[in-house]
Length: 470
Image (cartoon, rainbow, N blue to C red; front, side, top):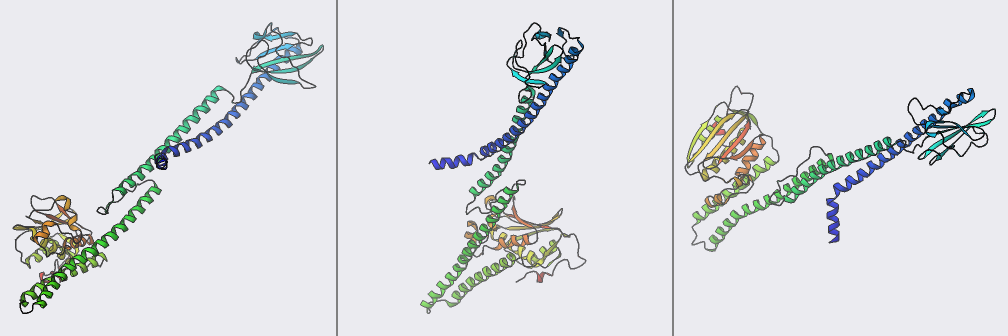
């Protein structure tokens, strides 16, 4: 149980773990860069403080040399903070800036040996508040060595508060943006993975035609989805081949079993057998076997992509010629438009029409309507019967091989179950479609073929006698 919880946590936290890891790396990089920048700013501020101390010395030292040193030193003209004391050779404060007037010497140290200056951090210097950097300078006078003590604010390692706040704000902002961007990208990728997983979970043996969605952006997830769909294509093909072999074996075995039973019974009682009737029943089984084998050979040729003998053909005349050479048990109503040319294999389209009309004849009550018309760039052939129709949930199923609905089996057991499958294969071989559309009554089969743009000068259709085929 604990292992299952850990697995669920691992799956559920992919976004969080990836976001935290990326955010941590971004924060580490930003902090490193910020620290380097702050050190640079601190170094610059330290140099500027040193320059201010040196400027104080440059301002006071000439006054000492010229004997014009006032008791109260003027403040800096730029308003910058600078505290200065001048201490004579006897240790008395002889001049100071306004904030140090009357205060004792703030520096308790002096430059050692021969150094001209000495700087120390005092917290605080005498007479001042806070930690400050005090720089003590030697000035040689006739009565001895005087000292110029200059105090400037202490400079932290990061320079100043503005630079620190800016670095912190930039680090937080960049880290947040990187983490948010990572979360968004990972969420999008995980969304695609979730969609693929959900679709795969829905696929069963009765729904192998389903395919997982293929994202358009993420190349790795796109390759995964395409590989999954290729695998499903192969799985569906293997399943269809297995089912086809099973269904073909069943449909072939049924008439063979019936003929064998008839012959065995006739041989057991030869004197009581009506041999002409037996021969007629066996011949019916042979006809059914021949029809199944013929349809199987046709499907094999279509599956193999056998070349088509395609020629520009007036579809209305082709359909009219085929309907005229056959007789039907129900009325055929024709609405055949002329000059609707298609580039087709005439025998193939004739086979398609024959299969559709025979299917309609088995289900029609009294009438079949055949329509040929043009609809923009497409030529339309419709075969409509006035029977019970086909439920919407069965409209794709009827095109599967060896598929016959219960009503069809009850009415006619002689069909092979391959006619509509062959018709759709022929339509697809012509870059067309064959579907079942809604109608007021009965089934409405609609064939759509691309219109032929070049019109033949002669021979718009084959003579009727050559259209029937084997």
